[in-house]
Length: 206
Image (tube, rainbow, N blue to C red; front, side):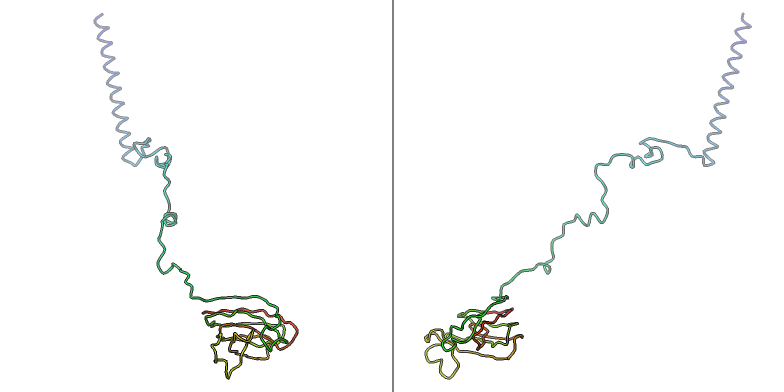
C-alpha cells in the first residue's frame, strides 16, 4: 500500500515538472517571437485601437471638426470704413423722357411750338441737356423773372406781359445734340405751327 502511494506521488511530481517546463518553454518562445518584431495585437479603448481603426474614428463625435475654409466663412468681419457708401444729395436733378410740343404760351409766339423740360424756378439750373427731336429745334433758357427796368435792351419772353424773363435762344439747326446750359427754366422750341416730339435726358443742379 505504501509503495502504491509513493508511486502515485512520484508520477504526479513528474507530470507537474513537465507542465512547468512546457510553460517556461512557451513563454520563452513568445518572448523570442516578440523580439523578432512579431506584432502583438491589442484591442480596446485603453489602447486607442478598435480593431483596425482608431477608437476616435469609431466614436460618435457630436461636434464636427470644421475645415479652415469653413472657419473663415463663419467668422464675422466688420466692414471696412472705406467700403461703406453714403448717398449725399447735392441738389442735382435728373429727368428723361419723350414729350410732344404744345403751342408756345409766350406773347408774340402764338404760332410757335414749345416744350418745357425744366419749369421756371427761383434758383438757377446748371447742367447738360441731350436731345433727339423729330425735326430741327431751337434751345431756350429763361432767366428771371426780371425786376422792373431789367428788360430793356435784351430779348424777352413773357406769358402775360407782366412777368418777364430774359431769353437765351440757340438755333443749331439740328434735331440731335447736347447743350451745356444755365437758366431759371429750360425748353426746346420751333417756329412752326405743327407739333414735334423730342426725347431728352437732362442732368442739372441748382
